[in-house]
Length: 527
Image 1 (cartoon, helix red, strand yellow):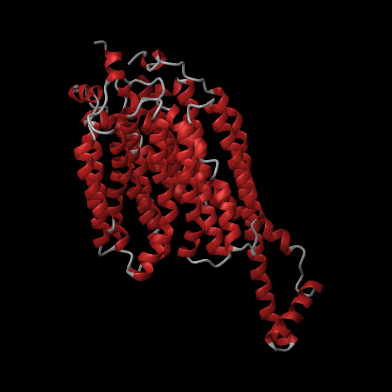
Image 2 (tube, one colour; image 1 turned 180 degrees about the horizontal axis):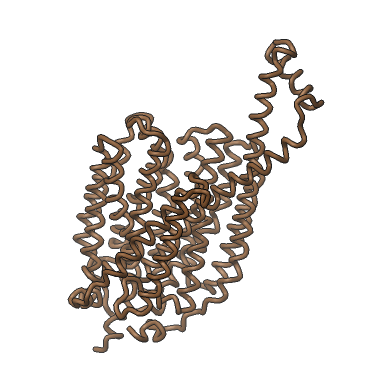
């Protein structure tokens, strides 16, 4: 039997849907833990006597470690076997969750979070590659719909669940809840998951390890993630520390690209990007990550910072949207293959852009139900982007390249998310300053508007005009700040909407895969 025929005919021993459910459990655990940790950060800082800036290392350490492992997870899967690598990630994530829950000090917790990030970062690429190998091209849409449902539902319920746990118990339990899920995932993975013949054959090869490539990508990505995460906090290039980390990231990653392009057995197979479909998909994933992560951060910040919502109540606004996306994933998975997927993706982008632009209608008087409904409208198009792109990533790619495909696409989405969050945070701060100056230019302390406001303030508080004057000015200043911040959020949503809308036509760069063709010679050439 030829190698190509063997690749096409191989199927796992166990039911493919049980395998999909198995890998989805670990996905749900990892994504849920990330969103819960964000909510519990103030509680962690308070219990350990740490400042808010010090406590943010609980998040940063995880993000950096996860970003480092993502691009090399494909190589690690090929080197040690995908099942072995995947189960190692589950074990590491579960045990480090236990260490996080038991952490007596902040440094101990940060080290445990680094280990947790190394485990969690390797899960998603392995899971997507497992699904791609387990399911036929025709059924991958449904499989990725199940996987995608876990990805979107977990962060939707995470803030609500995290708020409830930290309010009724303590922050330690947000990590302890991973233990039973991790044990179940490990048991099922051992029983259900298996490596394809191509992966088994690859692990038997003992090619020399590209230590230069391994170290350069790890160091370069770590510096890049640190720069993105801490840039706004440290005033970007006004900080010598950020200047240094940005320079190190740029130099190291440029060297890494040059080195890997020449290497016969690269840690990250960058030549896969020469394929038109995959190269376009990676770019779309990068920008989609910027918008998806960015909007998920903006809405809770708006609710808690300007409307005074608690973390739990803000989570309740996001939860219905997560449920709506879950059903959207099912519909998108079932409709995939019944038309031109490029049209589906384009319409998904347009719907997402319209939903984001609709959020520019938010103001300081928006009701809970209105915000919840608008958030649902904002996410309805996302499943029709995520499912086709995730599926088309693997079309025409030989099985031994599935690990590399999933690593690169997940890395692009995560780096896009980090960049999007960093850039939006900066944009919000600068835009708020501009609006504050514009609003302040229309008001003078002895002007008519302030006089009228002071008179109403004095009447409401039952004091004299003179006694109320200083308090009224302070109150007016606070109102002005809230208005300036609200306008900044409106600008941010408009910017995201324009970015997404501009992506819609780009999907037509991608080619439709020829029918009944499983292997693309362009991708196999030279390997």
